Image 1 (cartoon, rainbow, N blue to C red):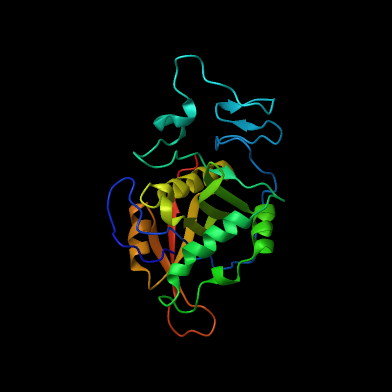
Image 2 (cartoon, rainbow, N blue to C red):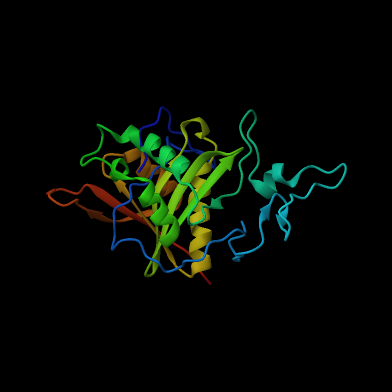
Length: 246
């Protein structure tokens, strides 16, 4: 779910505020896939070769671009591009099991804080801690976009039977309106195709109508309404997006 934003725009790169998805626990985290991917290509896994700016090498030394040629890391087509005056938008990177999740936790807490006072019951992000982030990285997937070590966006992906569940999608306040929320949702679609899962699923609180518009603009449709325990009204809406997994 997304907290309120100052302006809602339209177009390929618009994002209506800190891009968030309220994760509602569903049968716990699934341990369907325990490997972790170092390759930014969604089409393969690599547990050994390190990722560099120019692809995969066996050495841990980054490759330099050929003389008189631009660095592919800054290429709009190769790595997502750069907005004028904005940061380089890197490809999403998967958080490794055992990796420090402090920056991811801080980002999610800060982004979800905008929901306080708008939604009832309060967001489960309030209860999120380092142990939960570590468990998600080990049993599911945690993906992030970084720029010079700063985490600009993050998302939890949990493979479930027949679908990939998207939770805790967050974008830093200083990185808004750069298309990162849409980039993360598109990356989730790529991961679902790799895993052979034909449906993306997420949930958004009923109060955050601007989030509903954003998800619809990203190809999702509302398929259900659910209530938190103890509530006699719908508190969350379920959105899904069907994929061609070939």
